[in-house]
Image 1 (cartoon, one colour):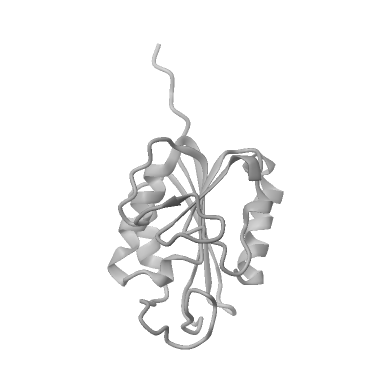
Image 2 (cartoon, helix red, strand yellow; image 1 turned 90 degrees about the vertical axis):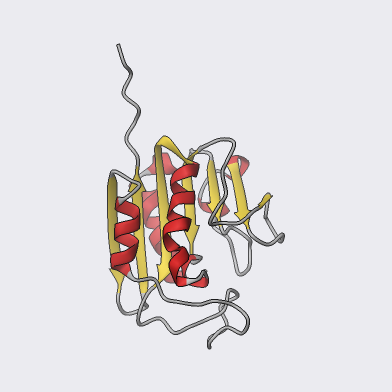
Length: 174
């Protein structure tokens, strides 16, 4: 993960310390070039990826995963640009399925003008790997279709889109 995205994640934890104590799942969480586990509670952390590898606890398709449980924190960082362009709504549906009723999703992805890169960060059009910078409008639509509160921010210099999405707490019925 590159420094700008890592700094954004750290700023989210600093501004809302409750994020650190939640059990979490990292969608696309294979540790390729440094993970985010240390920002949160490593004891309550699970990583899901479509390929077995360093730090992966669950191997499953990121677009169609149906969890047996839900987590208070769902992260998906620097993954969406490595999917086929039409798969973004499917990925967001997975984030929603994994998110507890009072949970939060932290999401980062590449957008224009970020240069194409492969899943290990090497610049250039990835060989045998899909790549498409995320369209912020499509991301906002997909998030709004699933989450009640969505906050997006952008780093136009580095080509990053950042998003925090939340579900409301369940209301007890008397």
